[in-house]
Amino acid sequence: MTESPVPLATHHHPDLSIDSQLALQNAASRLHAEFGEHFGDETIERFLNSAYNQFASRATVPNFVPLLAERWAHQLLTALARVESRVTDAKPTVLFLCTHNAGRSQMALGFFNHLAGDNGVAWSGGSEPGNEINASAIQVMAEGGIDIAREFPKPWTDEIVQAADVVVTMGCGDACPFFPGKRYENWELRRPPHGPAVFD
Image (cartoon, rainbow, N blue to C red; front, side, top):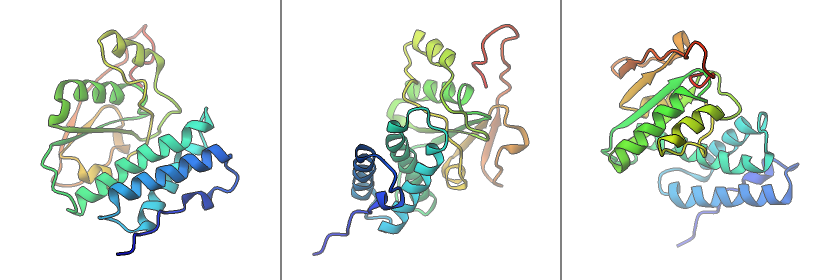
């Protein structure tokens, strides 16, 4: 039995440092190991490279881009597998959406993961993703014993929305995606009048 080749994602990014090339190659290997039974090499590589390009243009620390790309590609592939019924995961999935995915939706995601544990799946996204999580949001959540420092702003995709059982919107307005038949909830969360922009 011949093993499928690991996607060579780095040939799309020849200008990367050696360390970043190795990190991206290792990311491709891990994604292939997890999703290879569901998707072909070309699909996995396409998602990883799309994720890399999403973060490379606005990254403040370039060395972190391969890691962010891997995590985002993993979420996208997981969502696609659910949409196409390639996996049978009965856990309820909630998607939190706001504008910059840097405050409100990240805090909601943190609370969900803290309270639900392994009983559910949660994702978040933004219509205009920022460059990093709001420092005030990280601090406030940490005071409650919830760590969201490893999270990062990201957009949503049709696959992500379609894979969710419940979509919670928080101020993204007309930009929020809508799919008929899906359960939507809108949370009106306003920024404190004299406080930091935690809820953007």
